[in-house]
Image (cartoon, rainbow over all chains, first blue to last red; front, side, top):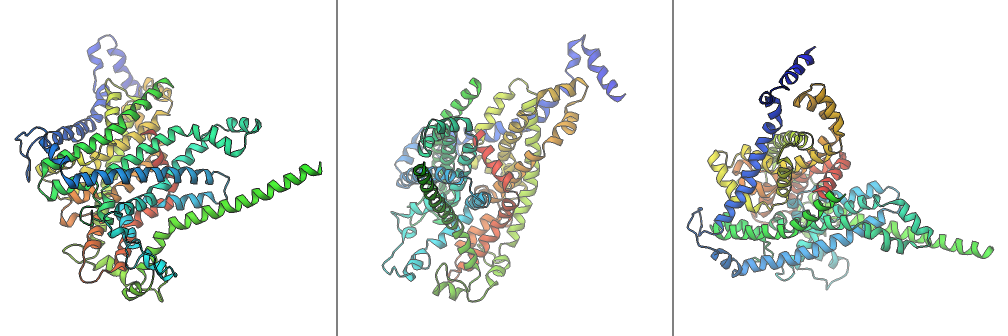
Length: 309
Length: 295
């Protein structure tokens, strides 16, 4: 009976249009409104705000004296920033490459009807549940030259073994790679494994009937069909690399000196502790540029694919 | 005839050998992944002398839990020496409300975007999607100013607010992708029967949403618990989350370095998300891959 009463309202209103704009029609928009407003302000608004700040000479407090692009000029003349960008190149490149390789190999190995696959998968993936701060703390201990890995090897009889990467300015960035690969490679494995499970079984059977051996089947059929997984993994990993901040904070704190800084650490240091808001904002904008350079082509191809499908 | 049989037997024995090698590789890789955690655990149970004289893998002569109690209640994290327990509590006070609010908002947003489309809702979804990926460095300073104006700088509510604002993009994405696969006839039929916006949500949508709610809660819990950037940028001295406190503990050096205390504190900070992962790994992985492949 109740529903009838509710029902009658729109039925009567069918004649006159204005009555249709009832509260019920507005409901979806009303409940979405907070998210829309907050997203527009706190994501896009703040982005513009930071862009504006990057063109001012703000130091300890935001000021709005415009200085054009001179902060960017200062940025790219700043040795610490160049070190941070170079580190991002080395760290990001190696991190992505090793994670993808390990991920795809482990996924293929695990996809061979392995007994207790679930347990092994759980072990490969658990670092992903941990904070980068914990990871950094653990690896700081493992890699420390006095009592860590080096001493383990020396005590095992390799008396000449030295491993001082953590305190060596030329090598410290590779310590970041080791810890980050440990953390994220299992995740890439999980992505590839999900992809492998989605490969059309008939296609594989057909190839095998045609006499293709396992190696050829993988090379010609299975791996090519994993291309989308490959691209999404690459986008996610580069995103993780560009945003990396906590790992550096915990593992090296940017040191020795600033030899293991990444852009995110540069930005934080200049904005919050060195009273260089203008310069910090400029570095944040460059980071945004890096992310967009990867993301926009990816999203574009994804959306186009979705529309075509 | 016997010839082919011989060949067959040969390949099976080669195959057997290959499988043994495969298991060996998989298990040794698993050992490598486990090693850091094992070393952490061993180290946390040694005393300082054993750490100095032993190696990473040497076992403690007897189990010492002193490092654990010190890490929990008396280790120095910056200028106080109360261990990480107060900050552990802070993290829960941030995580619980932030997870609940962002999950509810995500569910409603996802419901609207997939079933009550209006002009601009798809465009907004695209805008939100890009929001999942922006580096937070771009919003740090404006957000710090805003929190100051709102009077919630350095407070737990401020951190909850920040985590909700930047978590909603992901939670909306999860729910939207899930609801996308719900047949729209279901909702259309209910609308014809006169059911309203919230009735449909409660009676039809919510009851089928349990899996995605679990995925979202686990994802958000892990993300927010593990957060460091927002914690270090927006928390006050007594509202620091456990990740920030852990980092302070490790970098505070009074006298000698106590790696056993560091490791005990690190394990404690990792434990909540690890427990969730072990208990609900399936949902954790689903969240990771959903956020990844679709996003």
